[in-house]
Image (cartoon, rainbow, N blue to C red; front, side, top):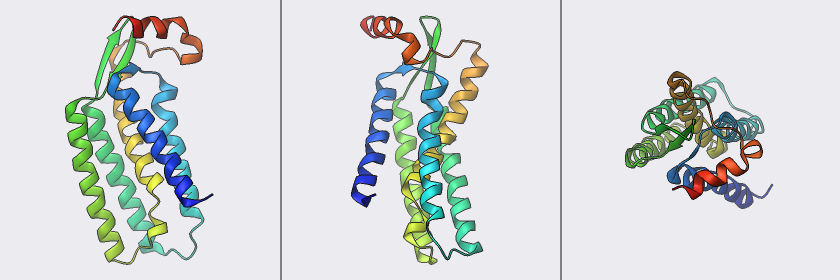
Length: 170
């Protein structure tokens, strides 16, 4: 796949997820976990296509994945999880974006350090970094959702008019 097309697809997924969560959306497990799982899978696939990596390279990748997951978990703690119409909803807050900006700076610094120490750029797939960040966020939000005692929102295909009526009531 063309690299520019690949980057555009990843950017589109991220923009859609962020815009939906900024407006507030019903919280269901599929929408919470599917984007990070897909992006992480794509990142691992891209990493598997890079040959000649040594143990030190894999250590950098593992450390970067752990860092991304931890920063995503911090971001997940800033997301507003609330009950609406008998189901869970989520919404990004100003603090979510502040944490995201700090996370971006930290991961950029980590990537620069990785490059300085010789890790090949294609051994640092962007989709893996984004995927593990969203995965850390999803794990925290999912835990908070399960702890709330309020059920997850139904999936869109099952929600139909419920979802439309929820938006009309805003």
